[in-house]
Image (cartoon, rainbow, N blue to C red):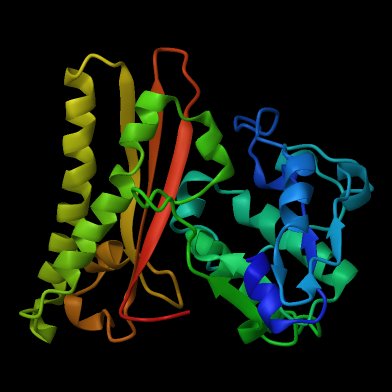
Amino acid sequence: LVRASLEENDYTVVSIFVNPAQFAPTEDLASYPRTVESDIIKLASVTHGDRRVNAAFVPSVNEMYPNGFTQVVADQIGAFVEVKGLSHQMEGGSRPTFFRGVATVVTKLFHIISPDRTYFGQKDIQQSIVLRRLVSDLVFSHPPSPEHLRVIPTGRDPKDNLALSSRNAYLTPDSRQVAPILYQALETGQHVWKQPHWTDSEKAQRIKKTLESARAVVQEQAEKCKRDGKDVDLKLDYISLSHPKTLENLEQMLDEKDAESIDISEGAILSGAALVSQAKDGKVTRLIDNLLLGFKL
């Protein structure tokens, strides 16, 4: 993200903030990795010609939430932002208050910094789509358009394509070996989706086979984990196909409507989440990932 900004802009500001509004009371806010000092050192080493990061914005929770903050939504005081219609699907199904927190804190950051362009990672694709709608609907002057919110391809481990994430620090050596299975599952689904034999009249089959093939990869690995004696537990949260603009769940649409009403001409988002841990009381790591099928952001 930083390199992309340095390439396009004379001045780059990086925000570092663990936003409590993105965490439900049952989630890992207290233990979430906080690595500000090492982050600053890494930022200082990234350059593009004579350009480098000009500032790191590292606010406190009190500065961002001056009315105080509680993770219990019903007890919160002050202004919060929601983007209706794009926040309940995909990640929102498992984390119903997450995008309320994202939209609120990013609104504050945009007002504070007034960026000409902003940079987000594809790994959190739903976040980027929600924020582009936020910029459009609330007529932000900075960034001046949804297109000025850049979405950068997911950073991956070069050896096994595991999506890079702060939560990967929770993985034990054994669970780290299992973690790339989510990406492998999505790749399997992508292969099915891209097969050249599909016709427009086979939309229902195409959607079902893509999802079945991807889910089967994770489920097979989960069964293997139960047999191998290492006490690694793998659970699939979801794998879904979504419309790239509305985020409508294509599988649910098949159940509720006929296949003719489903438009896949603009492509689809194949996304998923899985939970991996080791031992009975081991830390649970939530993995997320996605692939773009037939479109670009």
